[in-house]
Image (cartoon, rainbow, N blue to C red; front, side, top):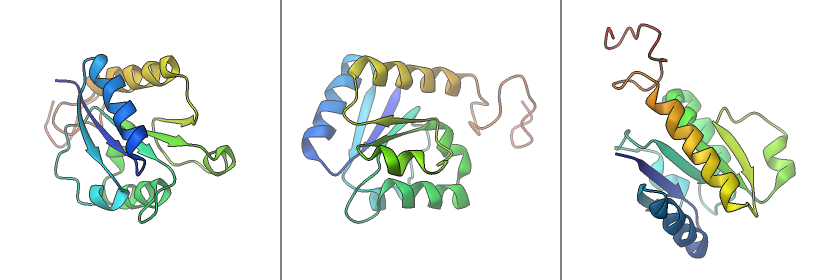
Length: 139
């Protein structure tokens, strides 16, 4: 199943992204802030759309946290930023960074590319290409 998570504090952006992704065949979950995703229990999201600027725990903090605790998840993250200077100053380790306002086809192309690269990884760990041996699951 194609599952996506949208983390954005703006209700309108969340709803827009949900409608866009559902139209493209994704099952979508929504969160209002990065703090809600710190202890992300679901690890089967093919794509995570993450807003850069949020009031409590922004995209930069969340990606820093995931770098320490679960770096493999960053391969599934597309960072959305209305602040091009902030998003271009450093490497967040994410699959992609897309500037707001975004063109919906560009976003869907990035989402589909992220989904495709994720389907070529170890199904259990999600962090090794299928052509390599995963030490966690001996695939």
